[in-house]
Image (cartoon, rainbow, N blue to C red; front, side, top):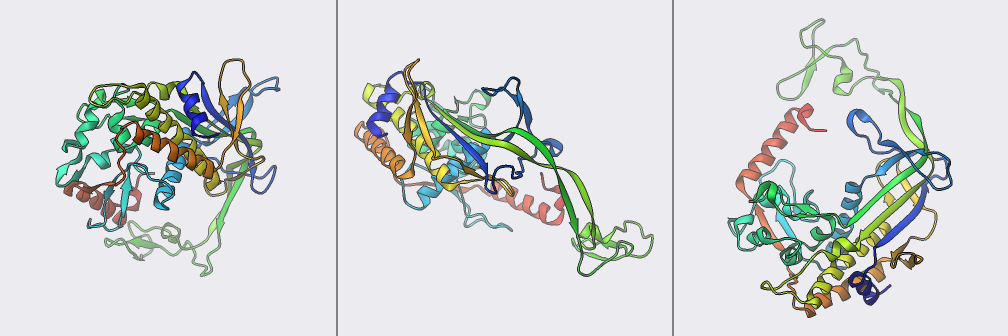
Length: 390
C-alpha cells in the first residue's frame, strides 16, 4: 500500500479499509483477562453470531469503540510529541495555572470531545474566548460541505467524529460521524471468580475504634463514641478474604477496525466557497491516511488494555481493502513506517492542492473561571475523597 493506492481507493467506489486480528491473553490460551466494568461493576456480555457455530455464543466487550478511538488518538499524540509526524493541533496550556494537582497541557487529541470539547471552549486565544476569536469562529461555518476549517485546526476530528453541541449553536452544532470504528471482543467466554484480602503487618484489630477529624485526618476514638469507625475504614487492619465473580476466560479475542470510505467521501473542502476535484480528493485522502496511520501506531503500541488484560496477536497484523462488490479483499501489511510515508505524501498533496495546513500549534490559555473550577474540584476531592466521581 502506498499513497497512490490509498488515494485511488478513496476517490473511487471502494467500501472500506478493514482489519481483523485474532488475539490471545499474553499468558496463553485459557489465560484470564479482566474486561472493563460498567454500571454496578457489570461486564458488557452479549450473544453474537459466529460463522461455523450453530447458535449465538456468549461474548464480552474488552475494548469499546470510544476506548479504541482514544488509544488511536494517544498513539497519534505520541508520534507528534516524538516528532515522527506533524499535524495541525490546538492545545490548552495549563502550566501557569494555580492548581493543586498540576496539569501541563491538554490537546484536541486528548480532550474527550476533540476540537469541540468544553475545555477548549472555555479557554482563550490571546485573551479572547477561543470560540469568539477569529480562528475559533471558523468552526461555526464547518459542515460536511465545508470541512476546510477543521482540516486547518483539527483534521483528526474529521476521522473520529465530533458534535459541536457546546458551541454557539448548541444542539444545532455541526456533526461529523465517526469514519473509524474499532473494538475488541472476547468470544466464547466463561465468567470466573476473583479473590481479595489483606494481611496487616501491624496486626491492627478491628475492635479498636478510630474517628475522622476535620482536617481530613484521623485519631483514636473512645468506645461507642459517636461517629467511631473501624481501622479498616482508614486502610488499617486485616481485610478478610472475599470471593466474587471476576475476570473471564475465552476461546479467543478479536480486534476489528473499519475505516468507512463512503463517510470520508462526503467531506468537501472548498476555498472561498469554490470546490475543485483536486482539493476534495486531497482532503479526503488525508483523512483516510490519518485513519490508517492511527491504527498502525496504536497496534504497534500493543494491546495492554488495562490491569490484567494484556493481549497478543496470534498473527501478523494486516488490513484489507474492500474494493468492488464481489471481489476478494485486498490485503496489505500494516506498519508504522509505511503508514507514516503514506501520511506524509497525503500532507504534501493537501499543500499542493492549496488547502490550509497549519504547522505550528494553536496554544490557548485556560480562562480564569475554568482554572477556578478545576482548583475547586481538586480541593473538594482532596478533602472529601467520596466526592470523586467514579
